[in-house]
Length: 260
Image (cartoon, rainbow, N blue to C red; front, side, top):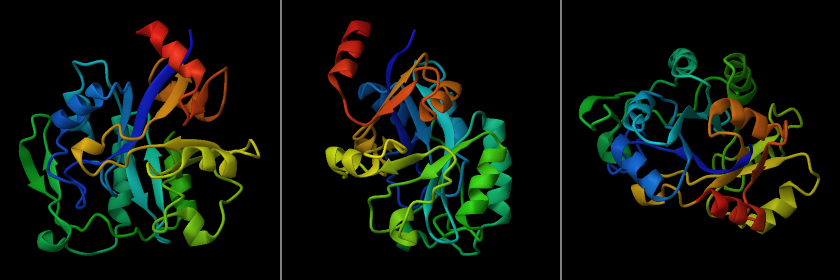
């Protein structure tokens, strides 16, 4: 049976230098549940070291945590990359490590980059500045993610910085999932009219949370059988009745009220 689930698929942790210290694993899980989310994705900048901790923090709850990362390409385009398992994500991290742009993090300038466990104990601090663009372009990144069974799409295309639209001046016709993300500040109706009028693109919106209070501040509705990665792929490809919506339609409201 299909029903509508709520997801926020762009959330940072204390590993991202621009994120607040409030974004520890247990705090993220607690806030996501308080916001009524069924599914989240952890997407730190070019790093995945805290994903497993959030997965563990959510293990005794109904919240599903999708492994992910926000990749900054050589063109400085940000791409959301999501993976079916922690192992496939870890394998992609090896590729990231091999292609990072050298640069030390200045904590006083950029902020701390903390690796923590599920109980939010500090295990280490990443010294490499994680927010620097990789030494590989977006086409190579798409290939590497796809080869590991992942989903990849451009982040916050409506923004003036780190946006594929602003950087390239267009959206490539060969995006693997025809999915693009708009930021939480975007006008949803305007974005739907602009990007979905042709019927080819699917929109996702997410909080891009850098502070705990931002978790769930923007969300996408997914019509699926369950909140998991396999169903997410079906929704993103509009397969077998699955669907994605950034607008909370009357159908979604009624569907969720029945479940509640």
